[in-house]
Length: 531
Image (cartoon, one colour):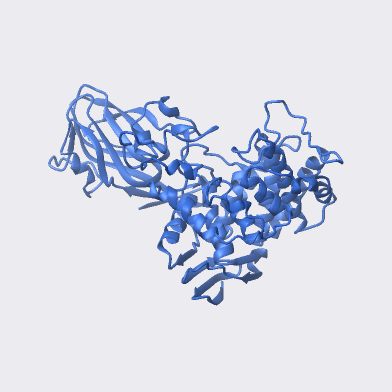
């Protein structure tokens, strides 16, 4: 791996060989592209793959989701230079699609583009999220390639914790959540996605903050992201143009302070948080009617995409405002926070249709009695990757019994279709009659990437690596391992709910040092090793 430092952040460039050839045409010795060899231009001509003529192509599988581009090492070409078409895809089908087909796009990071290469060259192109690549020769010529290598950009953390269990399926879910999160640590911020949504969204950031603190401790990507949102949003506007996302910013600040113990950062930013709470309060009448004075097409009421423009949207918005107010009150007093709760409390008992709405009713203070099994009805049906962490938290408060089986059903469902990172969204119903992302759909089979998705993430525009989907790991740490932190771990308690898991072992970075936890057959041992 090559390591480099950029703006005081350390990254590595992981060089990945393809693991298989998915398809090819008019390429001689195509399997040479799979072989380990020195990544350097050479006069040697026996270890090359030859694109024999215009229209020759190869489709490569690099084995896992990557954030980066492709490196071409060329031995020779017939002309001075030639043109190639590169099509990257998070699924095999996407890599073999044309722009516009099943909503295939170049939004946010071009993944379908032409490049020019020359004789005996070493050139790198592209920066997107992908696992598969289709390379086609566009010029009437031939090309001898020594290597076609994927370059994966990964952050390097000073500290990196871990959690392992005796349940191998759960370990696979944990590892995938970690890798999903790491890929979205880019350029000193925490992105939402590496193919699409390569930006900082306040609501989407919450699970990324929580999970990253458990794994990597306090880190600048968090504060950079929070500060960026504050600096980019005048007090007269809403963060990310959505009222609820300003409330999410308050939640993020409070969760960051609680888990990292960085009270200095909270003090530096609390005036902005107080103004957000004041602004929210000013938009709520005494009888709980919310009016943000926004245009008709604005997202006044928004909990998530599935509930958008439904009756649940207003209920979910109100409950998340309460949740933000209570998060702030857990750190310090605020008259505006108390007023928000008082005005909106009526929404806690309203009937709702969606699990995520009920989850935020419970998180905001609804009585979570054990009879409230709404959240476990039909297992993982109704879950989303954005909301799964909050639904699981609320289900735990409601004394649910099936959180572990739901995690395996839902996140294991993505793994069963070849996922190496967790997706922007996933409905358990998509499994019925669909194939894997690393195979071409068979006759009569649904393409789980191109044929599904909704709202802004239809078809191939759907991101198959979204940082918010890492929140399942935060729930595993907080509930199954049972770790609850305050002030960065100055105080903590561990109350595992193993749900039949025989062994759990974890080592996590706290403010004061490394916390080692072991649970074997229900017996807990822990040790804090000071820095």
